[in-house]
Length: 143
Length: 402
Image (tube, rainbow over all chains, first blue to last red; front, top):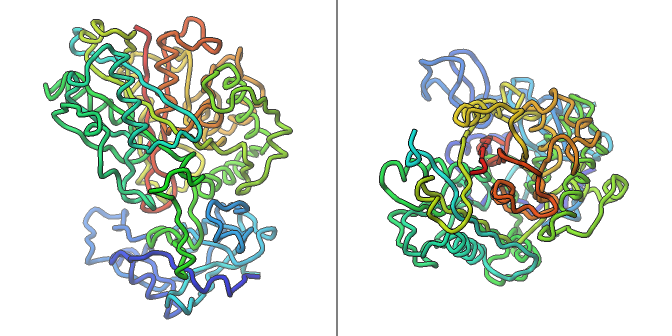
């Protein structure tokens, strides 16, 4: 299982783009938000103007809750680290998760990498990081 | 079309090594100085300059350059700029250079790149350590907010995702990746300038090398180098008066699949080759069968397999067996990455392929020279293919013997 004590100091960025700040704030409230089209309901990550209509504007788009569930589309297992500070966490799997709503979301998996397979069902796990005030959207195997 | 409407490379400068202890800017400047001298020109003859190794701000740590090799060399360039999107800088640079010459904005344009990754990673340069850990202050930098990756974002991590998906869809194997590494090394052993010259490599060596990021072993990953490459571009008419042998710029092409960021889900196992290929081959008036020597971008092994398929050297999904059967080895039917590529030669993005293709077209390949080679191509892949906010651009140049 994840060595939670090693996540305490993690940050994703020094600065956050206003475009995606709602997503990261949503995680703190245990909501996995997608940038969603008000015309057709398609959800996007990251922020994308819906490509299904020509007449859509940014006023039609809003961050809406989603299932936070999906399927592993592809993954790797990181075993060597060019930055030594990651080494104690490894080996771990990084995955592209095909969310049930359509987008592919890049993430790190909590589970041991030997259980990870393309096609496996996964769901988001919100990991609060006390020292930075961030909540990280990690994923774990569903069953 | 008169000669003044056609363009050529009239000078080449290359510097490469391990632990040279020079900054990227100095390596770039030295390559440019050598290219200008190779053309028999003076620095004051150069009136256009491109930095072809710019990386758009989308890439973590990217941000371009605050100082230029053009200033270091005191070039009297009417203009200097950086071209982003990663490893298509030489192709984009030639597109810009040829149009600038056509518009009368310059006569001779230098396009240069430099990188000091070998020294940098080993701490041989004091000023600019990469991936500096902030652990001492209690924080790690993990990427950026657009990526959402909650872990280190290294090139191997990202490209490995493509390889894993290619294995899943087409049954490609790690041993077939190994065959790409062995092919590159076999050519490198014919090239005394290659970093891995004199170090034979077998599939067993590949399989026994450490797993860096599954599915990639150490020998699936390109080298780290201290290197610089530069060319001088001018009209064919002017190039004929230069000291160095000229190489014709026959075709330039780009393709991009930004629009396929996730909803098409095909950009994990293909590059947007068709757009680039069709444009460049049309300009050059050639077909795939006319290519005598190819340099396909080999940041990692699976990228070579994907491009062999996407260009049509073999069917989609059959790139692994194509390489494993020995088609790309010295003496094989497709001379591929003849200098050793980035896997075994030296690493400087698309400039590695540029330098080797120019040499092949000049007949300067020594033991690795492809006999009678008239037309060569090289490619580059800019940014990454699948991470939102990153890019997906593919570049191709077709060069010809004069």
